[in-house]
Image (cartoon, rainbow, N blue to C red; front, side, top):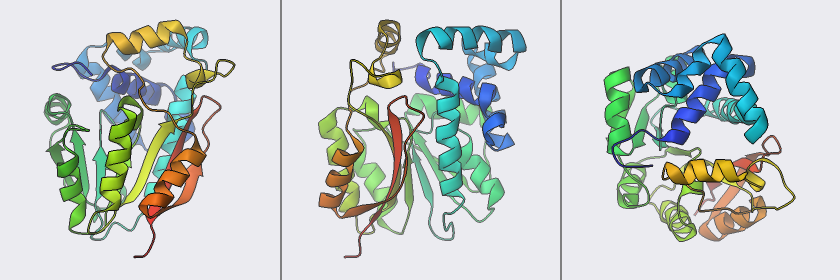
Length: 267
């Protein structure tokens, strides 16, 4: 993302939640937060709040990346289901790159004993704090990956934790992604991991496998090009070498993005 501006892709995901979140069973709190983010930032994506705007955005989506909003919301619905299985007593959920997501705050409303630590670039957190305010069970911590790997590791080191990294790792260079995974695996108490990744590019593929030129240019213009891709098997092998085992996987909606949940093997 560009310094001093909100993440364009985070706002795009928020518009998907506004458009299709209810149909995918996302919690009302998450949808309200997405609406607040779009209104506060004055983005054209706030068109998602109104029926004519949703129709227009559906036409644009159909021409560029068909099924994108449904994909975003299905990804979040899977993540929401996994989070509700989390033991939240003395096991915080650390959200790396929270953007304008509302699932963490929905979790503390669903389970009042939960602790959620929202992390992101300082610019994004300032905006988020100003619009959403404080909430019991939620802490904010400025953190920019990959620069602040040590800070993320320190947040995980003292006790069991879940690290959520949804829609973030694909924007980091491959070497930094591997360094991050290995660093977390070497923590005193390795955290449970839930993260998304992109499959390798495929000239005959669809969605994120073969990005349309207009989508690539949009990402580059906003300083958010895709940098890391790996197959689920490559990720599984990397995690295994670091001492993790994959416990669940979401295969996506044929757009070339998937999610993995992994837990550290007993030492």
